[in-house]
Length: 396
Ligand SMILES: Nc1nc2c(ncn2[C@@H]2O[C@H](COP(=O)(O)OP(=O)(O)OP(=O)(O)O)[C@@H](O)[C@H]2O)c(=O)[nH]1
Ligand SMILES: [Mg+2]
Image (cartoon, rainbow, N blue to C red; front, side, top):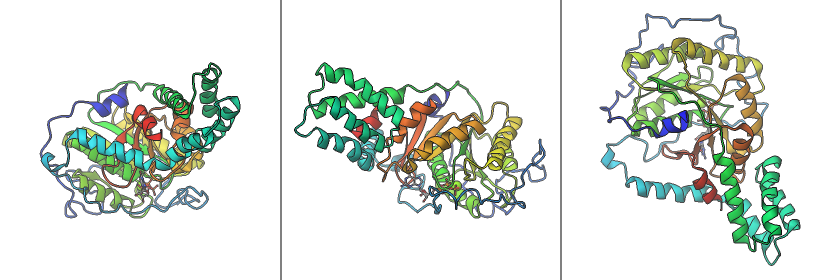
């Protein structure tokens, strides 16, 4: 279990505060202190698409797709700076409770959709086959997907016939157990121990990639990991600046180049810089792209290849970020991204404020990919390793 274990690895002894990126250290071309500018990133391959000049006919996805969102700069939050451990607020147990409470609160719409509907459905009624048919409809509309819903309901039918599910409470408990089974039953990721460990983050426009990277850098930084960010979104204006703001908040270095630079070259540089500077975790941001745009998916493949040329086995993880509010569309995104670059895990963002949280279950089942993290808000600590039990508990 590489990925999931990787997240849980024993924290290294906390390093001294990593050098924050300052604007002096960050000239236009390559902002990484210690970056060897003279050493041009090797260009192991010809460049099929140069995002700088020949702009893709469709600007990385936005207009055609209703799900694309105008990405916003991260909002300043009270708890965005890495304070010394003592100032980090409540002890972990309380923190966990706090997050659980928040998760439950923010999954409110999904819970209302599923749990609330079961309450209404069962009110004064016998739990029988007919009721299960109606329940199936509820699950489908909560975006669990037809196949998953059908399987969950089929799993309940026997229990209903044996009259084991007498009331709404028992029905919910059985459904919750079924959901947990689906979510836990995902393919393991081959284990790897690497320095630096390279994570590439991909996804369509505005799903929350950059925000997630900021949160991930914070999460791993707090565990004593030496994170370095690579700004391979060289396409969208101000994308690198946005990532830089996160790097500053978290206090980790960033490698970037000028707008329009080859994203693969930035990725290459980032790994090289991490090796030179003893950073043990590199997270590469990429431009949002429509999963249906073949040339943009080719570019993603190229980044993937170039990373592998710089460091054997890299990227060790490819995380697809999915916006939970897009519901079933997330499934086709997952499929097409997985065809382009082998995904190792998923991150589901914006689980706050959507009634479509059920899509988590559908995707986990369909893709057999672990859901590594979920995002439930816009602040630095609104990201958590995904826990099936916790998730199912928050829904019911
Ligand atoms: N409510 C909520 N908002 C989120 C979450 N994650 C990200 N966002 C918001 O989603 C918007 C887009 O986030 P970005 O991180 O810029 O998304 P992106 O995928 O990097 O966007 P592009 O680089 O343009 O493709 C921002 O307004 C974020 O604050 C989340 O878990 N919950
Ligand atoms: Mg971004």
